[in-house]
Length: 359
Ligand SMILES: Nc1nc2c(ncn2[C@@H]2O[C@H](COP(=O)(O)OP(=O)(O)OP(=O)(O)O)[C@@H](O)[C@H]2O)c(=O)[nH]1
Image 1: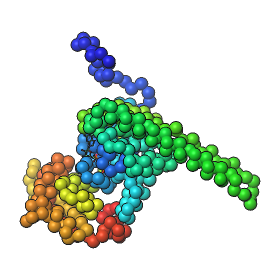
Image 2 (image 1 turned 60 degrees about the vertical axis):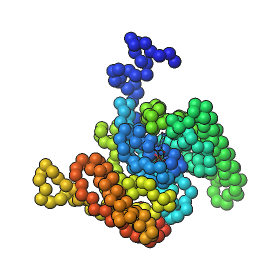
Image 3 (image 1 turned 90 degrees about the vertical axis):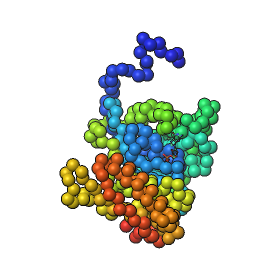
Image 4 (image 1 turned 180 degrees about the horizontal axis):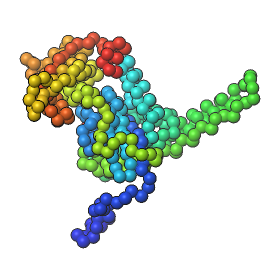
């Protein structure tokens, strides 16, 4: 492509907003991918504001947080799921149930694969689940393109395309074999029912697109591509709304994010945050309101409690300051944050404790 000269309009950036050509579209999309694939960061980049927490620790996303992408052509309600992964604990199983339910409800699935890591068993497992999950279009998104060279990116794009072809072909074959077995089964009652026509899976991913949430490369192209896959529909949310996640959950996520900053690898799994109370302080002048926020941070062992609290309470103070600033920015009001660390033994394996903690 040649550089446009100063008096030539840039073809990719029309100066006047143009009327959308087609009908308005709106629907749901979900980003899946192994932990750390960049789903939360991409959600934020698509929505344009921080709504999902990000961290460089795997599996920080516990709640389904929606971000809403508004465009003249349509609206995209993004559901950010926890990393789809093999269940290890009860909590893991619940996370996977959540992912399966989410997949059934959306109009398009974005499968995130980082550009800077070889496709591994985790990606293959998720790809197989997506192929088996039905006939939803899957857009493969190669994330973090800013971290690799052009040649490496090309290689990854080819590998991801090939992964799509192979899992879809295997799924197609498995379905054909199941149908054949069902047809061979002797029937004892009634006339033979015609075998239900299984929807033929697409021969690969519906699309493959490289993006970088950090430098913005192709983020808009991805938004357009996902919106185009939505059904014709009026907008599902009022313009300007970015997320329907209740404030309490967002506040809990901000504390969780602050608490995870710089701690050992095993801690994220053992950490749950519950906002006990959020009430305006009485007797404050109308122009200087203060919100009292009481938060409990649950860990599994007293050794973990000690890590969170730090020497002489130094870490807890840091967590408090960091999350208070973020909460004030989110809610637009001064906050008094009352933070407590509690031990709830083996909460990940105990269904009663899990529901008490909101899972
Ligand atoms: N350089 C670069 N880093 C990125 C990009 N997207 C995400 N990251 C980093 O990759 C790490 C993981 O990103 P997340 O968005 O938290 O990943 P996730 O898939 O939501 O992770 P889980 O919540 O564990 O499932 C973070 O350290 C991000 O800053 C990108 O486009 N470029």
